[in-house]
Image (cartoon, rainbow, N blue to C red; front, top):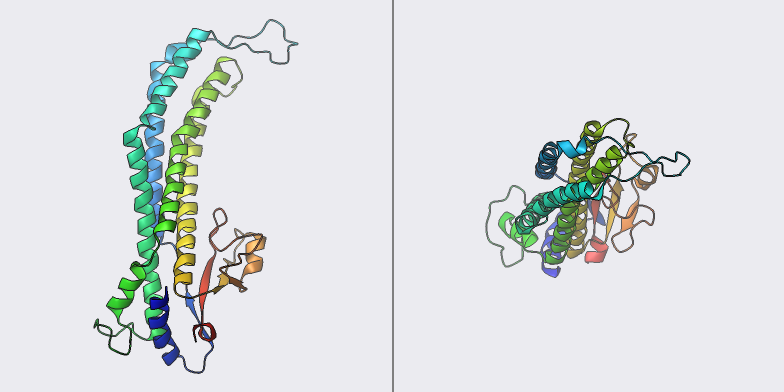
Length: 306
C-alpha cells in the first residue's frame, strides 16, 4: 500500500539517519483473544455432549442389549451386528443430533463465531502494528493533529490507514476456514459416538460405553482448545504477512521460543532473515505450522524504500 509506505518512510528515515534498516516487532496474538475463541468452541463442544447424554439416556434400553457373538469363534470377525431395527433406531437418534448442529441456526452461529475471532485478531494486529510504527517514527507521544503539508505522521492518521488496508481477501479466507473447522466438532464427536455404540453392542468395548463417551468428550474439549490456539495464531500470521507487504516490508527476522516445546526446525530458523515471497520450505512462515508459537520482527529496509 503505497500511501502507508510513503508516509511512514519519511518519518522513520528522517529519525533514523545513518541507518540502513530498522527492526520492529510484528504483532502477536493476545491471550485474551485466544481464550475467548476457546470458550466459544468449548461451549459448542459442551452443547454436543449434552445432546449425546440425552440420546444415551433415551435409548438406554437398546444400548443395554447383550453383545451378540458369532457361533463360529474361528471367523475373523467373531461378532455379529445387532438387529437392523435396533441399529436403525440408534442411527436415527444420532442423525437428529447431527441435524441440530448442521441446520441454519447452527451455521449462523458458526459463521458469527469465526467472524468475531478473525475480526478481533485483525483489530489487535492493527493496534499493535500502529504502536510499533508510531514508536519507530517518533510520533507515539505527539498530539492527534491532521497530517501536515510535508506528510508528517500523526497518531490518528496512521491508525486509520492501518485499519483501512485492503485485507478483505485474507479475512474472508480465514473466516471460511474456521467455519469449516467449527462444523467438524459435532461431526467428529457423533461419528465417534456411533462407532462406540456399535462396538459396545458387539462386545468390542471392554471398558464400557460410559467410559468411552467420557473419553470422546474429553478429547473433543482438548481439540477445541487446540483449534483456538492454532487458528488465532494462523489468522494473525496471515494478516501480519499482508500488512507487512502492504507497508512495503519484504523481509522479516524469525523469532523462536527457546524451550523444549519448540520444534528443532523452528529453532533452527531463529534469528535468520526470510522473505515474505519465499517462505522456509520445511516450516513455512512463523505461525503457519500447526500450533506454531514463533513470531517475527519486520525489517524496515531504507534502501528498498528509498
